[in-house]
Structures are given as structure tokens and as C-alpha cells.
Image (tube, rainbow, N blue to C red; front, side):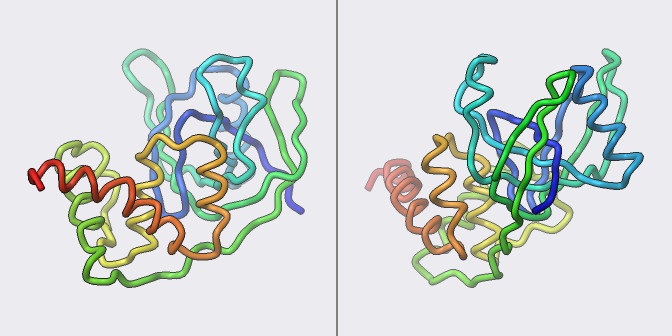
Amino acid sequence: MTELILFPLNSVVLPSGKMTLRIFEPRYQRMVKLCCSESTGFGICLVCGRSSEHFNQFSEIGTMVQIVDFELLDNGILGITVEGTQKFVVKKVWKEFDGLRKASVEYLDNWPESTFEPDDRYLSIQLKEVYQQFPKLGELYTQQKYDDASWVTQRWLELLPLDLTQFDQLTLSQDCERAKNFLRNAIEPLVKREKGQ
């Protein structure tokens, strides 16, 4: 097992995904300093609510991320960009003196690349449209792998409002098939409604 700093969030990032974060709490400033000085990453886990009392209830599955860019924002807050590298299962969690969480984790294999069946291509097309509507999201990716079903489904799981149980069940799978089935039921009705079918 590996020891990892945890950063609980209301949103998620999965392997090959990118996310921008604003770092202002002292404990997370310390986290960034530790990661930079030791050339290590940290783990992001999904939490079930916005208030602090829910921050002990987070997903069983998390993602190890590496800091790939940083900037000092206008208000003096540190902005960082992270990229997901590998999923893990949380085994044990504890807090340090300042409330920073650490965990013992076991890493999981990343999903293998996968091709789309013709009937599922709309998942890729719709994701491309989302990135066109919200260019700040799309600009995070210099390479957009719309032909890889694993890449596309993981980007969708990052965007959709999933509860902890849904997230853990979908991401614990060994490949993207279960997530693809979930997305068919979640997105296809929306596409048909837009087209007036």
C-alpha cells in the first residue's frame, strides 16, 4: 500500500483528465509545497456535500494527480492545474495536525483504450460539443482522444453530477463498458429530446 495526501472535492478527475484548482487553505498550500518539494502527487476524492460536515464521507475510489502547471491569481490565491494519472482504492484515512488528510491506498489498473461501436459515436460527438460550448474545459486538453471510448467516458463521468455510490460502482470497473451503458441511458434521451424525437 502507498501513503497519499487526499484532497476531497465536489468534482472529480480521472486518469488523463485535467482540472484547475484554487489553493487558499493553509493545509492545502502545505500539500502543494510537499508535492513540489518531493516530486509527488496527491489524491482527489469525491465528497457527498458542500458543507464541512460531509467531508468525512467521500468516495472509496480516488485518482492520483500530478501538478502540471501553476500560476498566482490576481487575488493572491495559488492556481494549479492537475492531471489524473491512476485510480486507487482508499483503505485507511487519518488527519494530520492541521486537518490535512492522508490515506493508505492501493492502486488500480487504468482502463485500456477502447473503440466505439457505431451506435455509440454520439457520446463522442456530444462531448466535443460540450467542449465547444465551454472552451475553458476543452482548452485543458492539447490531445482530445474522441476515438477512444475509455477517454470519452471518463471525461463524461467528470462532468456529470454523480453520487458517491454511482461514482464508485462505475469507476471500480475494469474497463469502460459499464460506464458506457450508464452514459447511454443518461445522455441518449437528452440528445433525442434536443432533436425533437
